[in-house]
Image 1 (cartoon, rainbow, N blue to C red):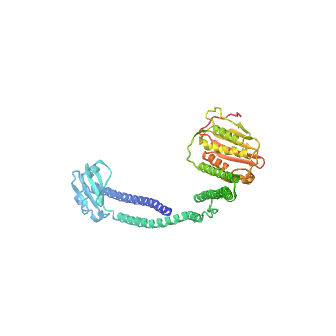
Image 2 (image 1 turned 45 degrees about the horizontal axis):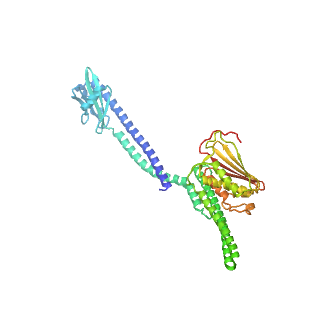
Image 3 (image 1 turned 90 degrees about the horizontal axis):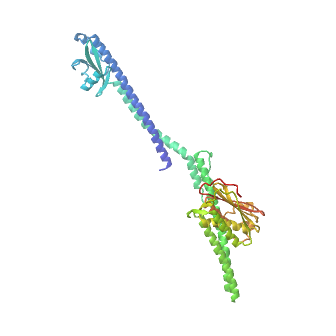
Length: 464
């Protein structure tokens, strides 16, 4: 069901329920009010008849005959009956005596005031009236013709009013739902115009305050992320195709040349050697792309990992690959208790690969010693800083240096494919950490890794 229809239905049900409750209250209040007023009339008439017929006339026949019936009857279908204690009818006015059952007699006996009850369409009050040592029972009945006519008119009015109001409620619900959903309809029309070919379009954010505006703002932020992802994907595909095409083209050219011109074994071996080098480049690039794909996978098994062991192993790999480079390890603030102080939740192989990529870049682009600082930023954050004094990265390139296959202009002369930092960035993100890079051209680069510790540590000391 459309939201518009849901809003109309809910609005209609809510308003109808309120209206019906209000109508029921009016109906009940008027019914009780009519009944109370009529009973008061009956009680007043009963009190008057008791005073006239019992106290003054003393129920003597000659006195009762002096009362004219048309003067006594003031209500529609009025009936007045007087009984003695033996329930003998002593006097009555009307078409028939006001009937009284044993139960009603007992109720009248138990109370000194009036007893109210209904007999069919007639409403009756009963009164126990003692006089001159005798007890009499007086019953006055009548039909509230005027009150019931007014009450029937009220029922008709409420019925017609509720039916008419239902029509107005439906119209009003449709109008308000339509007005309320117009901003959403506008957002939908704007979103439908946004396709993969024009991701730069944005949704109108309106007043930037209400819920619809907040939805538009959120969608625009998501759209910016999608656009950025599309651009990164396009850049990645462009660089990947270039990086793959170059060694494949070289390999094909080498083999074709060898096939066409190599005439002796030495020339053939030289061509085969060139082809092997190109194949090695392809294998290295493929392995890098596979590592990048693994870094994107969030389903890897997490377990306690000693980050200090990962760092030591990465430094060992780097010293083996760059035997002439000096790596200095410095410890920052550490916990007072070192048991499991460097343990994080994650994958040891991925963390080792990420740290090795950072160290390898530092050694590749710097001829001076590389400094590694290891410690706690605060009780629950482990921090690793890799500082080199190499060629640095230009400010305009630092925003893109973490993209896959992107390389700075001043580093393209060095071997590599621009995958190391991209893989490292994804691995650190998958472990809930942060990677920060600060660099100046000609002065060096500082790469900072922050990783959360799975439980709170004790207060760190200032031990260096």
